[in-house]
Image (cartoon, rainbow, N blue to C red; front, side, top):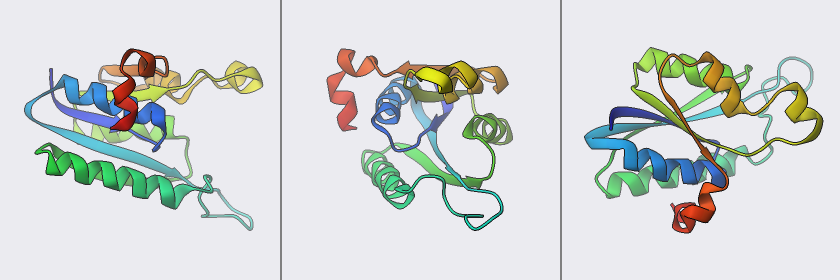
Length: 150
């Protein structure tokens, strides 16, 4: 069990499943840090604009989850980091700055050229993190179907 867990979320169903796992790993009285990286374009016409077109909806979804957690008595802090870097750089850096005990994140299996060149964000977090990283695969939804409703 961990006293402080950084839950890395992008608002996707895979991140919702990871939240369920984070809650199971959190020790009583512990704290969840909900971290969302709002990746931004650099330079040019789109400089400063969010990479994700549905970014406002993602943040609203996460904020609602955080409020639900607070209503349920969970100690939770919500951070949104706007960055020009890949989230796999920001997440371990924030985890280090906040001195969390572990990072919990979801993952999808990347396909095609993206998988060959980059791998998943979760795989890149594993390479950079200095604390344990618990990666919850998409297939965990099949094992815990109610987790997608978190």
